[in-house]
Image 1 (tube, helix red, strand yellow):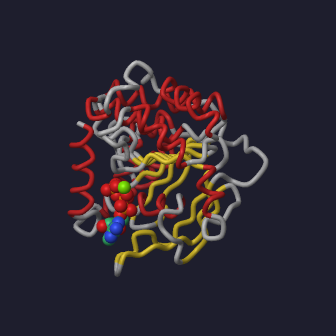
Image 2 (cartoon, protein in one colour; image 1 turned 90 degrees about the vertical axis):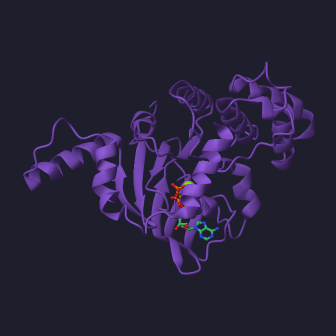
Image 3 (cartoon, rainbow, N blue to C red; image 1 turned 120 degrees about the vertical axis):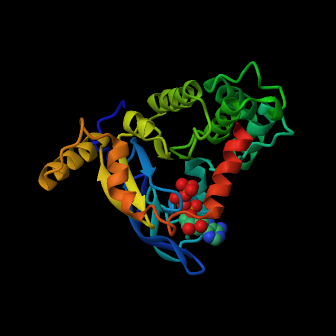
Length: 287
Ligand SMILES: Nc1ncnc2c1ncn2[C@@H]1O[C@H](COP(=O)(O)OP(=O)(O)OP(=O)(O)O)[C@@H](O)[C@H]1O
Ligand SMILES: [Mg+2]
């Protein structure tokens, strides 16, 4: 962590969602979501499979419409000015986004074109983005020859090439070994330190959230159920345990907080076959 989350910069929050609802048929994937991500922070959106994290992110990134409630990205309304929102953000989706049949450099160049990086600057910006994630030496190899960690770093370069003010990462480290996970976070933090970029990230790795996020929100059944710095959430659980007269071994971890908030809901209505299948597919492709 490099920034003090209480030290709020002037200007609008990077993201605000107010009463956001998005349903697929009868499934209210996002069900009245209220969320603010402050400029410059690393904000972790946590929650069990099927909690609605990816759906919320797809509303924020303009990939899904906002049928009810409000979303703002640096004050812009995606329903009114979709391109203004897209120009501000870089996005690493949960599903694989790199093309295995292109080289690393070609993949990043494609994103530079899509995100309107001026033609004159393109080659330099692509080279810088690849260098930022340590892929310069492998840049001209086909992505299908990359390891899972290299693919995730390539996707990070794709998202960074447009110099976004807001980087949104949906499970950026899934399926990676501990060293590769640390590597991805080091690259994110280096860019963040250099540019002041805001980061919104989802992860199922509670240790990562604890170590790298300024604030985290626990989402469950389409809504935020707990919000704070990792330390605040851990302290909060310790107090609840004391109040309940429970004696637990050791101080609570963020994983304990997660279980406390979501544990009662980890039943057959939370997550489904599609969630498991898509997570496995991603892990397999990367692994
Ligand atoms: N395209 C879709 N069509 C139908 N239902 C969907 C679709 N996308 C998501 N859902 C449903 O919406 C709910 C929330 O899914 P979402 O992918 O947002 O969860 P998540 O929190 O990202 O889960 P995970 O941690 O597994 O990635 C789930 O019940 C899921 O089955
Ligand atoms: Mg998801």
